[in-house]
Image 1 (cartoon, rainbow, N blue to C red):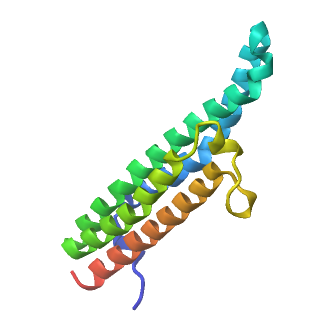
Image 2 (spheres, rainbow, N blue to C red):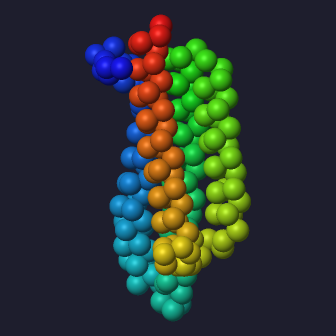
Image 3 (cartoon, rainbow, N blue to C red):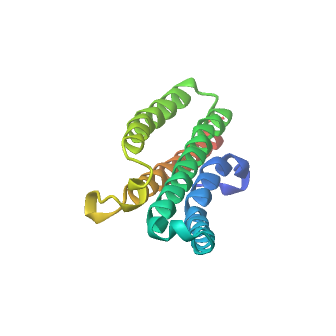
Length: 158
């Protein structure tokens, strides 16, 4: 089978690409947030000894926000798969895989206190936020591949 990319609907790739972008940009957001917190704590006398906890809680909220943004964007990917193939089978299979991946991740992330998302150690010594980000990027890369394959199959079998 020869791949024909000239007839591909590139807008179908936007949900997982947006999700990956949001995950990668969250690191810059956390650094900006840490700088802002350090400036704030420096002005307030009684908060100096709680600086790390405040920073970790804020970074935990930023991680949760990034997780939910990426999850929402990934949930839109099956729509682009269905729009190409018009196959409820592909739509159902994709949604089932996403749900079976994201529900356990959601409960796992919720099991940590906000300050532990950045500081806790999990597999390979990574923080829960980093491990979650890696899993979400892998899921979205698989979604990109599924969208590409589905669009190629739609071109071959209209």
